[in-house]
Structure formats: C-alpha cells, structure tokens
Image (cartoon, rainbow, N blue to C red; front, side, top):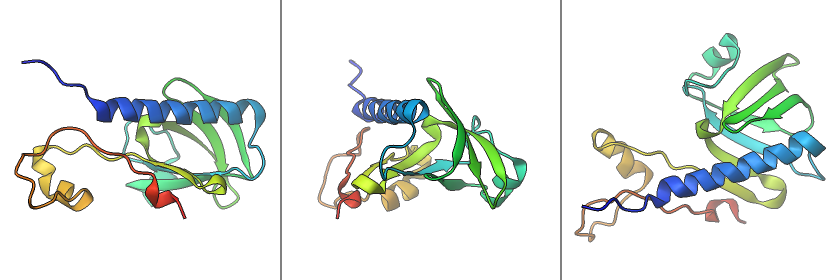
Length: 153
C-alpha cells in the first residue's frame, strides 16, 4: 500500500516557515508601521522555556503580544527567543514554532491557526473541534483544511 501525501503536515510546515521568515525580518529590522503580533502557544510543549512563575500562572497556554516593548529577539530554525515585559518584569522566553497554535497580526487582518492532531482516543475532542457532517458515509481521513476566514472582517 502506498503512503499518501500528508497535506496537513506540509501546510503546517509552510505556515511555520512563514512565521519564521516574519520573525527573522522583525529581528533584523524591527516591527514596521502598525504591525504587531498576538501569538498563542502551548506552555506544555517540552521545548518552551519560560520562568517557573509564568508557567504556573499559564499552565496550558499563553498569548503573548509582540508590539511596543520587546528585546533580544533571536530566531533559529526551530523557534525564537525573546524578552517580553510581564507586569513591568522583563522575562526571557523561548518559543518553538511547533508550540504555536495561533499567530495573528491584527494590523493587516492576517492570522494563522494550527489545528491540533488528535488520535482515535481523543475522538470526542476531535468532534468538538472539527465536526463532521452526519451524512458523510466515509470514515475520517488524515488531513485538514485551514481557513483564514475567522480573521477577516
């Protein structure tokens, strides 16, 4: 049996590459114009580096804002390091690209949402996140459709 094309993972890799390119540009030249980012990430990802008090406050996920004040932005192939201000306290973070669930630049109404891959054990959660039409007789197949409509006005 031949292996199919994994469009879902290919699309995720392309979208994460886009984020990497955007963050590289910001690291080199700063944020242009009114651009700013809301980035939601899983704090449970094993490669996320953050202060213990911050992880305790956000044990599942956190949305960071990159706008007016940030320092030490460095981008590598797997993620980016940045220092952000949390309640007048600068905190360094490391964010792997694959820990990101949403990336939004509201200044230009652009956003990416990464759908989570679920196993058969998590089928109930899968039904809540992406309901299937009842009339569809075929079993679920791997893959996904990425829609940016929710970020448009």
